Length: 510
Ligand SMILES: Nc1ncnc2c1ncn2[C@@H]1O[C@H](COP(=O)(O)OP(=O)(O)O)[C@@H](O)[C@H]1O
Ligand SMILES: [Mg+2]
Image 1 (spheres, rainbow, N blue to C red):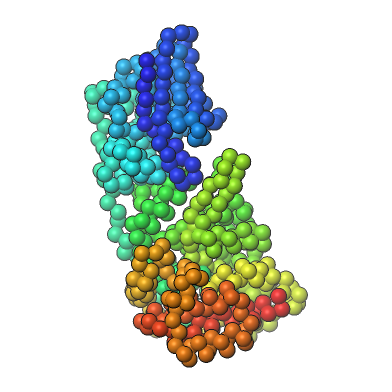
Image 2: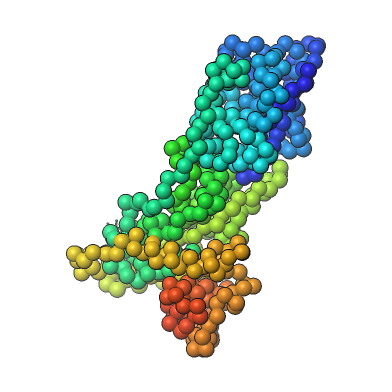
């Protein structure tokens, strides 16, 4: 007897259809799994056999061969347990595979018959829908996650006995109600209104949010760098639905989704500690997992105390920051995860923190200062479009009763500037000025004559690299958009240049 049930597998972020095929023949009873299954899949046999026994379901007494097709794709993990179990149920007559042609089953079976949650349910459900599957049976824990996919009927399964009751038509399982995303209006208790003064730093962060630029903040301890960075999410534009799905997929395969918010609609803000490993930051491990840079996809990665991160860890970030994707190579093949992020970093200018401070004396030697700054390499520094010097907050500002501008007001301007960019880049995969590619930069950044003149002066005076030159142009493009100007003028260039001055002040001896 032969039965075939739809299930799904996962490689990195990509789900693919898998058939759990069973051939049951007479002969000495046995139970084998083939089809490029790794050890974790072969362990399914023990789990499923035990689950059938403890749930009081008869295990077919036959020579059973399970094939996970297609046999050329590597299968790993416990996600196929449920599909194999249902194929077995078809063999012993508890389910009818003819009726399950448009159904798929994913989930891990525990020894006691319970169905345990698995990672990657969202990408698998999306793939199932594309394959023409209309009903998917998932672990109860992952029900809300699968219900995000419009057009799919999702059955949450608690245990094997419940599934048998459903399949035999005795007690049907209620499908999960389709998920309706919450409003994306921003509700954050961290608001820019809490930050007194610091006008220049706030302006820089607003420009960064408008154009999606990377920012580096340098300043003495207690000047408010961490405070400012943590408020960035409150002024970013809302996520599009496509962005939400992309980001949720990454959190789904990492097993980090909160069942109460199965669709991520707020841009992620990840702030890993500086002791993080290279694999933790950029992805990797024996089962290659997305790193913090990918978990921050479509959102923010905040590296606080940038100079404390190990230099090799930071250097690994360089390529992914440019490419907006990170590739992890393994003997078994390579996996690519997206990482389209905005990078915000903060650091002190020296070990004691007071180099360049207007009133406090720095106790570090020149060598110590240079050594500290050199932890951030020139090419890494070049990845930041905006460098901001965060001055110590003034007493008058701190004690003032004046109300500071709220995040909501800043965010309105950001959304307006982003709309101009969306129009400009319509039909391309560029979403904001920070992603302008070198082939179109001249075309989308027209300059007035006097702006050209200024750019020429700056280029010679500052000894700019071609990359730094392009970065100034992109920031100037954003400043002009905020000013609703099509052509970039002198004053826009002047603002953009102002945010490139740190490398000369601190890194000039590099
Ligand atoms: N501009 C400011 N307005 C209000 N409070 C501030 C400001 N700057 C700093 N603070 C206070 O100082 C604390 C330390 O700031 P923090 O952001 O941790 O500094 P840094 O990261 O630069 O060392 C903050 O938690 C906040 O209470
Ligand atoms: Mg700090």
